[in-house]
Image (cartoon, rainbow, N blue to C red; front, side, top):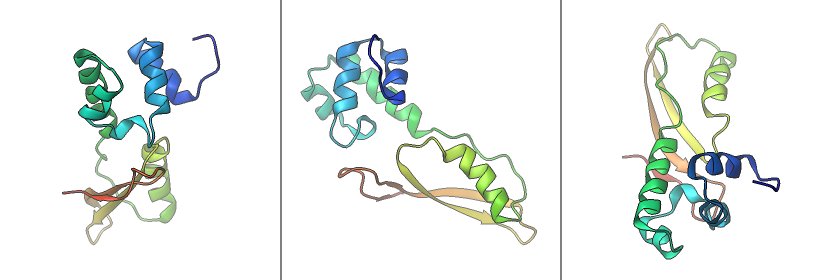
Length: 126
């Protein structure tokens, strides 16, 4: 692309390779990550393009890998683990980390995502 783009637009271009798609997604009110099938179709995307964007949305919703079992004993350790894993997120993510008595991670649960846009109101994870 010949003009300077936001980093996310550059990544979208690397995957989609279509100016029209990237421009429409970058300009979408509330962001492209939560657009529905109907909203994508309303942007004059073909069925194949809609499927591609929906697949990309699914992939980025799984944006961070499972936590390797370990101890979290200090706020600094929590910051190191989750700062790295969630630092590039465009959307706020609230997680609960369950620890056992020896500070070993038992589980983590995403309880809400959202923020950053009018459409990004917190949605409880079910």
